[in-house]
Image (cartoon, rainbow, N blue to C red; front, side, top):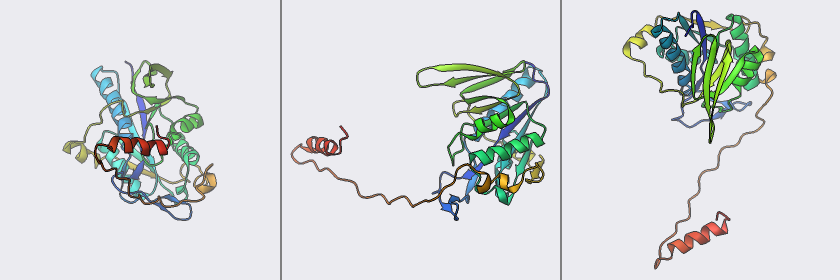
Length: 270
């Protein structure tokens, strides 16, 4: 395959660790981002990029560069450090107080501005969703803003001769899809098995460049993002009710099955 000079841009996100409870904060009911980490689903996109680079090297098909991109508060740089350990060559961090509270539309607008600021990419890769919002909206919106061909929910992909080819698995069938580069592809957790960074990769990541950008750097006004630039807004949020004690069915003379059927029938679950 010919991939000489291929530029891959991988979108990553800093999300609350799923091992801990999630909380909303502030008047805008935004997600509190303490105890956060790189979104697990983004690791599949990073692995896909690394495998494309490895395949190109094995075929002596030219160089492939991998850039990681995130937007978020200062702590979001931790997601970029993990991305560099997993194989990205360099990273960019869009951070600005005005970004807080951005929905999918405002997020895609901000990311599109960064991609254009960087001069575009041959292939934009991202996870099928973030593990906090789980909307899966940003990939398609970003592709539309950048006028890129898009393939979403790819279970496999390869790049050859200026074309990206992917497989999308449905409930009962699978689709083979291809698109010319430049293109955007979101990959699922079926695409690969992300590797763990070894000690050498962890140490090498410390020397890789991370560039910080502001909204002014990418030509965006503050009202283009955040609540002002969003299409949706959370108006109200309430705590999830505490779980109540369940109903215990006691077997008396072998009638537990009958009691269970009656219980389900009363609730129209049969």
